[in-house]
Each structure stands twice: as structure tokens, then as C-alpha cells.
Image (cartoon, rainbow over all chains, first blue to last red; front, side, top):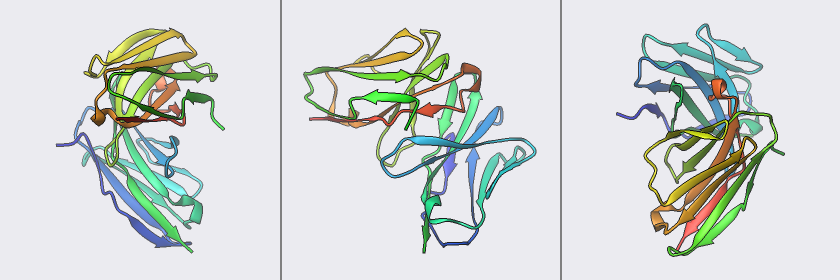
Length: 109
Length: 113
């Protein structure tokens, strides 16, 4: 079983729509969680950390469900600039960081 | 614009060549990392350096040899690579206790012929 699994998508949504997707992780002892975005042929960039109580950053909302071992990302009022691959990242111990293969989101005009 | 700079951006090398990738960060971080990203695969953490000492090596073949002369610079020395080593090699830095909040360089796209 992969350490971090994501639906690869693509999720094709119109501008203004809401899109949400999950990521599951296999290690119940995982300590911290993050979402990164990666544009085509660019480096990954940190989008947001995911806190136990859930957190929002503008149009982006992240949730953590430890019991079911998944995290989610919801994007409201999608913009064309939100088109990217979203990487789920899980830190399981001091030096182990596991990345998902990414979920591709395409926002169309 | 990035606080982590990698050179070269593109590299084509033969299987008998020796080359080095360079990474530089000016963010005041105390940890630096090498990652490998192959097509359609997740990023793989290769090496972790903290305060110029290697603290993690994720079973990377010896044909990849990292070097960290100081907290701002990181190298990846390459020799006798295989075609399957062709990938995007990304350098990143962070504060070690915030390893998940990393800043990445733009990467070196390596092709082994």
C-alpha cells in the first residue's frame, strides 16, 4: 500500500465552482500534514499546513480526519489560476516526508 | 523568484560522465534536501542535511553523492548514471523542525543518454 494516495483526477471545473478532493495516508502515527501546489514544469510550493481542527486560507479550506486517516482540500470560487496539481504531503517522523502523486485540477473559463 | 536557486536548469549527460548539481539558499534555513521527481510518480526524498551533516539517506544508490559544505550550499555529484535516473531533481530547504514547510528550487531536469 502506498504511504500517501491521491485521486489523480483531473478535476475539470468551471470558474466559480467549488472543488474538493481527498488524500489518504497509511501511517497512523503521522505527525503533520500539508498541501502543496505544483504548476506544470515548475517546482512545488507550499499552499497550506493542515491543522487538527481544520483551517482556512482565503478560498482554500483544509481538513484532517485522523480516525479515517485522510486530509481534504476544498477550493471555493475557483479561479483560472487555481489550475495546478495539488500534492498531499505527510510527515511521519523527524526525517520522513511522504508525497502523494498529486491531484490535477483544471479550471475552465 | 525563489530563495532557493539551482543550477543548471537542464543537463544531458552520458552514462560515463561525471557532473554536479548545485543548490544555494539564502533563507537562513538550517536544513537542505535533495528530491527526485520522475514522471507520474510522487516526489522521492533522497537526502537530508542538517547543519551540514547528513541525517537521512533514503537508500539512494552510491552513484549519487551529496555534499554540503555549509548551510547555504548543497551539491549532488553524479557519476555512471543510468537512463532510468533521468528525472527532475529538486533541492529544497527549511528549518529542520518545520521540514514540511519547505521552499523548493526550480529543479534540474536531467536526461541520461
